[in-house]
Amino acid sequence: MCIVEISKIWKKIIYEVSSLSEKEPILSKFYYNNILKHKSLSFALSYILSNKLSTNTVSTNILQKIFNEIYLDDSSILKAVVQDLKAVLKRDPVINNYLIPFLYLKGFHALQSYRLSHYLWNLKNTSLSIYLQSRISTIFAVDIHPAASIGSGIMLDHATGIVIGEGTIVEDDVSIFHSVTLGSTGKSLGKDRHPTIRKGVVIGSGAKVLGNIEVGIGSKIGAGSIVLKNIPAYVTVVGIPAKIVSSLNSEKKYAFKKSNCSTLSLEDFYYYGDGI
Image (tube, rainbow, N blue to C red):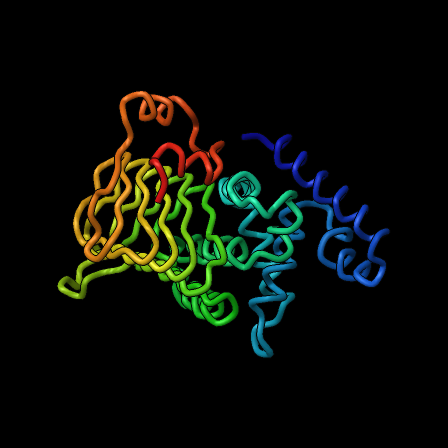
């Protein structure tokens, strides 16, 4: 993905806001402050997140400056932002433009705030990183340890109550619903006590994936399930403890492998796994 694609999405957001400003003048100042007065997607996102995460003692201006510097220093973060936007637009049936997740969806905001805290964590700036983690938890009701590794094309749907532990690895194009825990069993205190979630996985609301285990590519975990053992690729699991209830046949497995799962909607995921 290049700068041209980022610019293209930003222009779409500008167009969407300009149209809405005329239809709903009561929100025109809100649209101007959050979108129209900014020269780029990264500047607008820095403004939105800093306003949400600031306090009386850590000002919006300070955070905005830090966030802008991070985006300028590491272009991969902004590329991930764009992939996350595209994932929401493709997989969430109630979203029909980029503006809604960019302005309103706390799952998207929590994820982008995590990306900033993760950058700071990798620079050994743990104090500010942990501050952001705390604010993310308070404001968005999402608790992601800044040391966790999360890919791009991620959708945190509804997001309330999501917990992602320190050693968790989440690969690209994963969809996680509200009240999901990616944590440990409490039996180990090492950094390898958390799960690895492979590409294209869908985790239903309230599911718990616990321990140093792996959920294979393209698999789905049903709502409310508890996963304590490795899950192979391309299966659907449900229950307490989670058990395999369906798997892809060779034809559907080939279609999933051949496709880029970032282009799939949730309906596609359900089709490929015969439903949750």
